Image 1 (cartoon, one colour):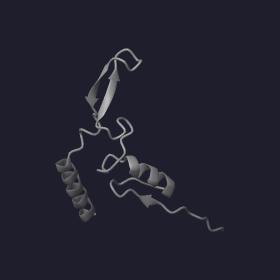
Image 2 (tube, rainbow, N blue to C red):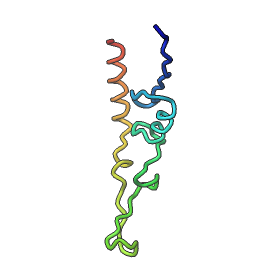
Image 3 (cartoon, one colour):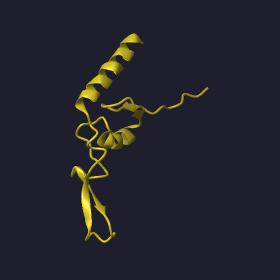
Image 4 (cartoon, rainbow, N blue to C red):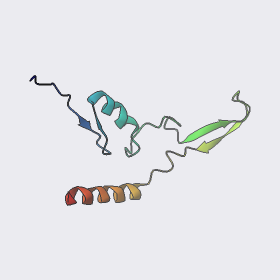
Length: 89
């Protein structure tokens, strides 16, 4: 029987996701529970430009639906729930 080398797993600081180091470094930058995350949709501007005629001359700005949904109260409630699950196990 041969010993098999295993890869070390890393855990996201903001959610329960686990993976290899390189994947976790990428994930933590965009994790929805990370309050300082990089939003790929609005690029942290807080709004998305909606072009009407697809050449950029006519359009309007709309709030980013990913960034505007971040709720600190909900985050605390989720963390409290996760702690209760961990303490029960």
